[in-house]
Length: 184
Image 1: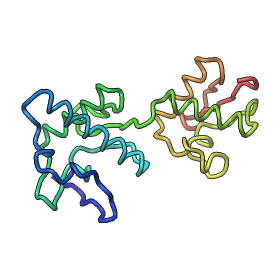
Image 2: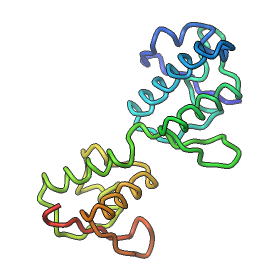
Image 3: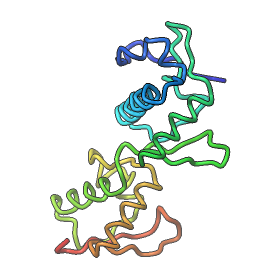
Image 4: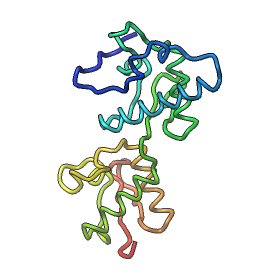
């Protein structure tokens, strides 16, 4: 297992230094609280870092070298499965070693995109998915800029289903076009 060290400037909750936190608790109510704390930690860390992929064997907070503790693989899987069950993650592979962390739902991203389009008078124009998601001109600084492609696509599809946008097939998913309805 390769778990990256946590940078010293990282401010972690006090419970991350509590050795039992790194052992799945046998009492159901205690385990529920433990998993809730892990979910909160994962979501806050990923949001603060702007990272959406979690690899079970590489996520730095599954270990705390200061107290010589590491959450075992079955515990890491249970933490991520708890995130999946709460709608905050999706497994990306059948072996369940990598997950997509959703600190914002596709619905929230869709709302953010629509607000940005309205606030900037961009309705009625056609843009590529790439221009909006990751381009270096139009959306730099927007809170959805750099969103993981799968979530961004889902957000656009939500807007399309709501009649607020229309997707146009391009040469690739990133090259697809999107036009926002003027009175969206």
